Length: 514
Image (cartoon, rainbow, N blue to C red):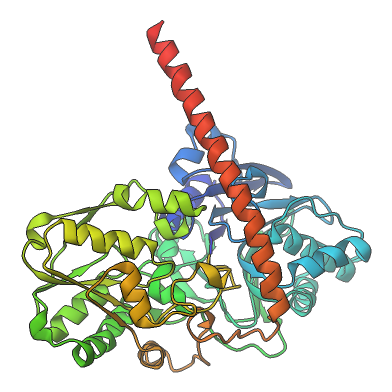
């Protein structure tokens, strides 16, 4: 799960891409990158860190051009601490292609071997994005070997990419001297939309992960990119579209509506805010059937994503809604922090309880989901320390029982608190007096009601059904082995980062002393 944006305009785009990435920062906080093109020359800057830290004035001055891409990274494949794996990625042949990608390829390992053995292309990192850009480059080379590159040939190449790769992918690429290409996997698992600017923007076209990036930068959203569809914007700003997949169906990721997307975004015709209100309505019905409302004094959300669901639940129960936790906005979202030790350590840095809202009360805490359980356990303990008489916990999402292979950081079942455990066992682990989960069928029904065009949802982390149909037990064994190696890399990366920070502080102290 990352945030991506691409722009083609008649004026410099570096500031516009920067502003869009700030609006997508919630989708990834590990690394950020921007690439621009002037004529056919690429200018790139990428590094680990938040957008505001990665890009300084000197970096922005080094990004000229009226065409560009940007990405904020949340690593689910490869090494979380490697700056080499930050996006965008670049290949120089054919044409010169730069690409950003949100999602996860489930057949990346097989493709890597195929690229080396058959296509004679070398992959230098563990990133599936490097695999993807090389597949695209090869297919573009095949369709336009001795011909000028046209939109028709580009769409033919995208069709070949669809036939080769599996998994979830929303992609934006720049082809030097030609224009901007965007396409989405045939199931539409990861979101992607596009729009155009007003008269003052000189006809700029923007493609982004969420509508908030368009609206927040003064663009009007045209529509979502359809599953399997490709959009090509030439250098004159003309938009060409084509359905490039054989059997496209719309199955967006349910976790986007539960947690990942901003509430002010609209994904595939569904208001994320409205979806979360509806989840709160059905969750209230579960609470009423499990716990007498008379036992609840106050409803308190766990910031931020759970707020709409908690407000609707409180309204339905006729109970006061209160803000009981203050969030430190300068600490990253713990769910998307690489490394369990970093995630666990940051919970109390991230939240602080308001004692008067807890003292002597039976509180119902509402969270968007419970994934590993460690954060929930800390929060329940914080509520008790603040004086709560009883602490009930409600999750606006069903139990997360299965690994996710489509770009969300839930790769192994052993890391999921609900895998192989009953609700009572989970309640005992997190220390709550009662635990209420959302009903999966009710959740699907009330979100789907907001857009009847949906074929369904990719909800594998809840129901164990992998929509692409290519995920096997052997794949999970491979993922778990990769996860163990990644965990070791993350631990080493954390230690290296801490050592670097200590050295920096020591040097700073020495300089101040002199």
